[in-house]
Length: 382
Image (cartoon, rainbow, N blue to C red):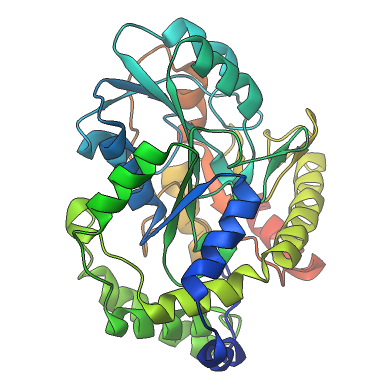
């Protein structure tokens, strides 16, 4: 099995965590420096950070965003009693097309939620200028954007509010970040979060064991144990309500997350190099139609998405998994190989064209030429 992702968590990191002090403040300092924002709130997920952002903004209406994303990214808009207003995507980079934003703004529009899909940064400066021209809130959803850049500007440094995941390519075991310069929004979100308790140590131990096993999944025994853990946990998780799943990371979450953050520069650079190399191979062979290197983007490749008219998401993702390639679609829950469309509007030409031909392939820091060639061989068999 070629795993989809590696958490890069080692037992040595757990031992080192014993000697880490004031990890919460160190995480806050890290994201202050990264985002350039004055106020940092640590939450239990990027989804929670987005939800608290809308609750703290205290306005309701339409939020302009991309339909090509997982349901989790849209849930905070819906649960905060707002309505997503989907605009079409750019078929090369798979983010929402900035040129479609202005014409989509109406009297009900309150915000733009920018999603840096797959770790490919949007033109955030251009979007921010549009938002300010129309007096709209701009929220950057950086769950997949951490480490990505556009024209030298890092994702998560421009928006009025920037929300991050401390999992994915931050390699933590659970947590999120809300970063802003707006003290009122920060204080309101902080008060709301204070109503909730800390996450369970049992859950932290589960995630720690899972991520240690996940780091060694190329070994069959570890892969079996990893999938057994995911299967058991998947039956208990509640995906329906953000508010019912809010908590604050506990002391062990924070210690491990801080140590993992110190690895991100190295790992993100590796992912960038591997992603660029793999993209060039797949483009040369005609196995993907997206990502044409331009506009001075530095991609973090948090997820590695490809599309082609030759692929069927519903059929081919399952086939790849049968061939030992752990591929996914938009949701990344255990054994979920396809997510239904979020939008039906006929105006979303490229979204409809790409949604059902989209595949998310494995990409992790240990991926070498041999593994890439195995994936290429499997794609050619589809």
